[in-house]
Length: 158
View: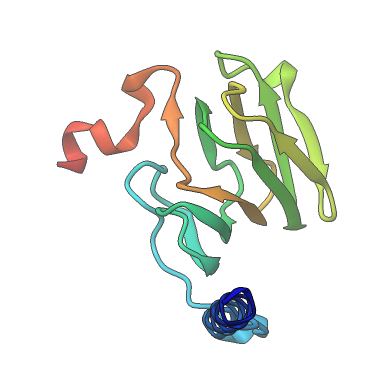
């Protein structure tokens, strides 16, 4: 009886492993294949967003890219999960705190990286036109320190 149980358990484990491997796939895309679109309403207009992998609105890993025009600002905000930012081109500036203060901005040129822990209040500004990559664990939620800064709550956004 134990031998039969061991065989059945082994078969179930192999089947489960096979199903897990079937649901995974590789991702390899060139920059010409990236599909850009408008950002979600929680980000100011003017940027473009592309989902590279995963779904930032759901639990699990995701990678997105943002194209930002020079001068683009994101007011002080926080996320419930860690945020990883890599500057792919241009220059991005990040600051920590609950108030947007240019004196607190740290410029990250292309190749720069920042890890912002969950719930850390921070703000950002594109010093030049820039492309940044953001990755982390979803759902990716943006909570503005001052709710009046949330573009999705603006009267014209309705």
